[in-house]
Length: 154
Image (cartoon, rainbow, N blue to C red; front, top):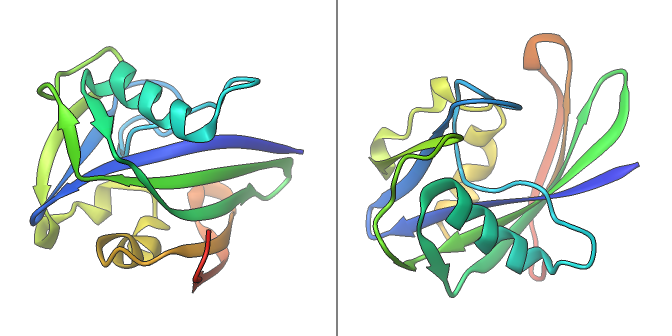
């Protein structure tokens, strides 16, 4: 069973906008902005809606760069996450009930406070390369398996 999710990050010049997840799945970690895709909703529209809900800004001209299937050992549900990059937006990022946004220089990304797989796909993302992959997590979010490759089309 697959669940479709989005993840969008603003990458402008040498900075990216991440959010500290304050509640729910992934709480206590820096991450991009995103979440569920509603029935009948386009994946791109979901990415924009989630960004607005979580950081108070309207991202524009988003580009899909990747898709990764995340699996958790012992759980039959697969999280199919669609990764988007935005380089323009309207408004100023604000803290919401769910996320606390913060700009990070690309040389200072806090990988030790993020999901452990981020260090694998982030170089593709920052280079604007398209990617596909799969990650299997074990207990305590330890990566048991991971596959990631650059692709021409996503």
